[in-house]
Image 1 (tube, one colour):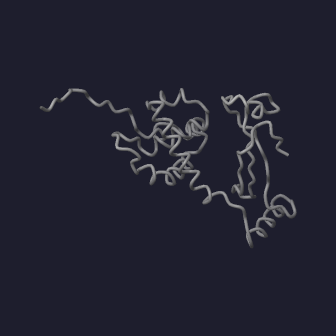
Image 2: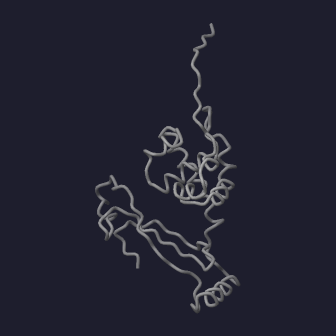
Image 3: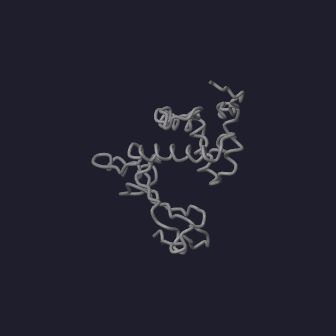
Length: 192
């Protein structure tokens, strides 16, 4: 006997939020310009279109990406589900998948200069900024995180500004290309 339960499947609005927001609003909410978001979409969409489970109603790649960017911009989950009408579980899956895809492609975008490019970079720094012999600029920032649950290491993450953090160090060139990035150190680690 075949029983059919008359439940309607209610789909959330999965339209493209970039079409409903001004470029300034997009930059404020996602911290990227619309053109950059479309560039990132080109990187992640091929992998996101492949189903990762047999459940129905997968989220479009754009929604996956925007969920991730909004979380990375704010650090909060509670606003994401309401904004995109997505459950917290699905939001977490979006963030995990998109971050994994981007991390797997990091060598395409983050690389240290070698060979002849080193001399060109030195010339560029000297010509534009009057800095001789420079191939990269280094800076670090403390990224606020939630207090770690592991009591044994909690103190290591409390930075000099008295909040839990990760010490992020980035080295870039004159054209704003990232040569090296490290987020492996807890906030109490000195960045010099």
